Image (cartoon, rainbow, N blue to C red; front, side, top):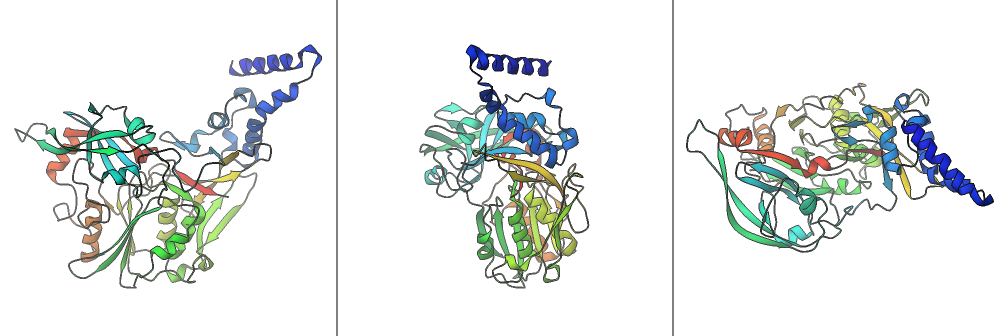
Length: 461
């Protein structure tokens, strides 16, 4: 029936355009030209081309992004995230897509109401200027209680200045066998200026930590694989061969494949240089596998870093280009690469950019290849890449500053740095306390997490 309606609409439009003796059918074809180009490009290049619906089942009058979604395979999406996508060429790669306050947050429901928990704050943003920081609880905005639907208005796409009421978090119980209750005490307000476009920092935080037994560990929170990877080389300057490296990818949804190659080459052992980094296997129409290597020419010094062990912190939002780094380094770093956190998102395909002179305002990022490491392992779509030590970030507990030795996930890593093994369930720094776990299970629930909404990207041109 959809085709009948679409075809009838098209024929009606052609008739109207050709009425009064003037053939204006070209205007009709102009309306569908960009979708026709998308469809033809998919037929030849799409990894899942066999799943593309027939033309008769698609509406070529849809907007380009809507048309692409309707034509995409179920294998080209996960958990509501579509992999193939359409971008506007006007989108800045370094600036926020919309005016923003510059903070990420989780919407948390407690048994005494809702709150926003600040996950992190971008530098040089309205949030930073107002004094907002990681771990703050926002319990009201302009005097109004937080609702479960307030994410877009206050975090995703705010449109005006607001006054945020901050609270302290006080779980309590009258009976150890009963559910924990949560109370918030008001501790003050912060005034956020009007949202604006801000620079988004790929490297959000770096720090060098020294454990009590003298081991040094360099920490970097890397939030996105931007198109320019030059900053990575300078960020790691000063690393010594006795140091450990802690790469925090818990909030990193991916980015450019080329930048994941730079970072991986930087972190790979010298013996891996010149060896297979990543295999990109195309559909059987194209019938080829492109192999990228750990390429020393990508490095300003010509050689990768010399260090002891690599620790990578992950979560379910660690995706795409982040997963490339983990999966492709593993074959070369047995006994030296340790993944801490929770399983990654699970995206093992990449999107290639296509452009069309007739639609100069569009970039079509189409899934064209399956990704595997030097051992041809690519089977992590369903379950992600599993950690060596599992610990989940506790949004109801203490959220210490990222890069602080008190932060729960980093504390677990530092235990291994000092002891050469991960802690047991009762060891200091191992997991969330029993009391906090009870809060997690009964006293509060995460309704939404702004990190979840970030697009998961493996992009190459």
